[in-house]
Image (spheres, one colour):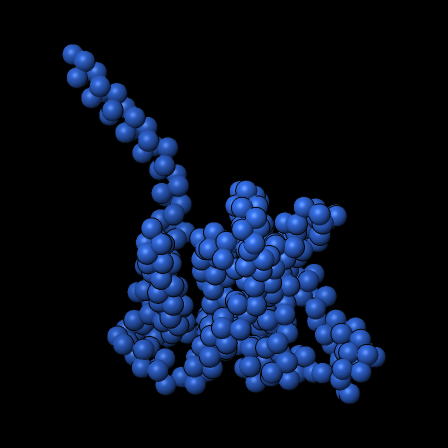
Length: 298
């Protein structure tokens, strides 16, 4: 009798558990699983709208011979290689500074650094375009103090356009990563530092050999999430270049190229889906590295 009661109770909780998660499963299927499967199917077709025709691996051949794709991939990798280390390093340094108990107004500084993360994307894009225009405050300041002899074409020169994108991303998302580091630093037992100080370990040694190893899980997390975010870079480039990725495709990223293939310049849904799976493959590899690093750590 007791066994029957336990079995009935287990079935009751099983049914109610599935009913509880059913709405989430339906939404995930509609807005995540179906688009993934649909885009995978589209990658084997060429054309657009109702004019799709099966092309097999034709999109892969087109991908291999597409110079614009390779340029977008190159730009995306450059943003990743340059911007992610800068942002992670700055976030760690700022968190270490704000973790100093002797620092006054640390709450104000923390809010100021984190504020760009929650600011309006349109507002901050307009602000940056105004600041970095030929007669903007940045050029005027650099001219005044004698660092440059003539205004820099931040939005018209291919090299400086990349630099501007990196500055904008770093300014916007460094505070987000800083919060993770600051939370981790505040959870480290202060007695560890006190013991190291008594043993004569200098401040730089305590940071390098105590703080950094204890922050390894957070560093791993922020590095992977920042990398994925950079590989999907779209908003800043779209707003700064009006969706063109200029000048001369110097800031064109894979995400922006997918957008242009889908909604502009003779849309090609199947080819756009194929390009999107390049990002999926890169993200999958990085996710594997994340799990591998976590397993190795254990």
